[in-house]
Amino acid sequence: MPKPIAILVEDLYQVLEVWYPILRLKEEGIATRVIGTGSKSTYASKEGYPVKVDASIEEVQAKDFGGVIIPGGFAPDILRRYERVVSFVRRLHDDGKVIAAICHGGWLLVSADIARGRKATCFFAIKDDLKAAGADYVDQEVVVDGNLITSRKPEDLPAFVREIIKGVAKSQGHKVTN
Image (cartoon, one colour):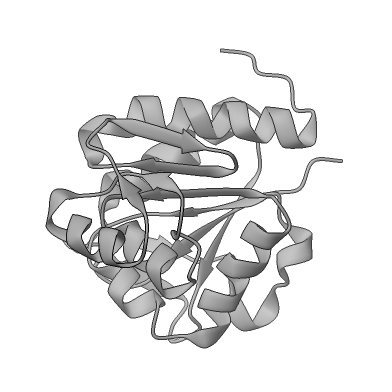
């Protein structure tokens, strides 16, 4: 049985970078679970659009997931303040699961110390952070380096989610329909 993909959220998330993957993965028959820090049960996007979590980070274990999506906005700066979130991402990475970060999501890759020596992209404003953490930064709509999938901004979402679906299919034997 394929494992669900975690989507990490906190206040000030980028609305499209949460909802587009949820809806596209649902279309593919891939389960997602929205995971928050535990500070509340519903988080607001930068525009105030709410997302209700399925669980808090304290209620889940990395072994129960097939990967993680780290949306952007300013939420990643809050997410990385929670050691349990950082450890969750690091564990999934170490287990070879899909790690997908878009926009400012790269901040969590830096905090989890999993960008070093990896080819990656991000929103241009944090490229220096990624480089300082040892990543090989490239300016492309989507970059795949093993189990790490990164993109720059909302406009890159079609390519980003397409690669997530491929990565999940490869790691979990899920049949891609589109």
